[in-house]
Length: 346
Image (cartoon, rainbow, N blue to C red; front, side, top):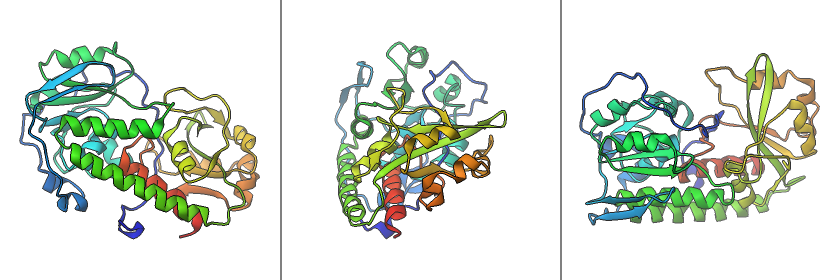
């Protein structure tokens, strides 16, 4: 696949998704409806997909060690986190229900939800009754541990539950791939999953070669996002263990943030002054306008920011909007393309 045939670039102001999911929300319960078909839902490459769908029984181990057994691969899937929603769509399957449809459609552009997808509340407080009413044969949920109370709440519906972890700071790209494969296995779309991942790997190698040919003043880099609270800009640097940091490393870049980060997502916290610690590093940042308040205008008014070496040299770059920083293979391809096109001027 050529670079010009790929999805339009994008980026987002990501919010930490590490809080445990809570109990039922107050979303109105819809009646169960037929899931939108994949043909109605998803990208052009799904229309051209020729990979097989298995019909064999499925037995797998989820991310918290639970055994999930299905008489046949899941066809009607409810998904309660955005990365897993994106993954299902990339596998050419349309979910019967999704948590926070509006939020997904704002922050994730790698895959588009079909119109009419049932919304079952927020990611933090999904509506259990709404999930049941959508009549799924599998629920995919993101948790922090095997003890997360949402697992028991969902199991009480009698619907099989696949519990997944959102990240692994020891191997962020490997975890992204493993999660995608897990969903592929649960839905009988393992062949499609392997085809997508092979394409991802090939795209990384192609992009790495392009970046290697660029005359960069430094390979040091930092990706960050931020928010405004009480008139103060907070910065969230992506350090070691963050997916977007690992993607940059794949291209031959050198992470510049060496301060403390959380072990699962590789995310730190600082202020604008804290950005001075990365020296001459190239800066990349999320510029999606957050409905709750955009931090970028406040950042650009600050003298500390305008005097950073990368800003003065024109090496501070806003990603376009819509790339999910905790996404699957397709969001990761968007990020690879964003880095590459910025660094090479292509």
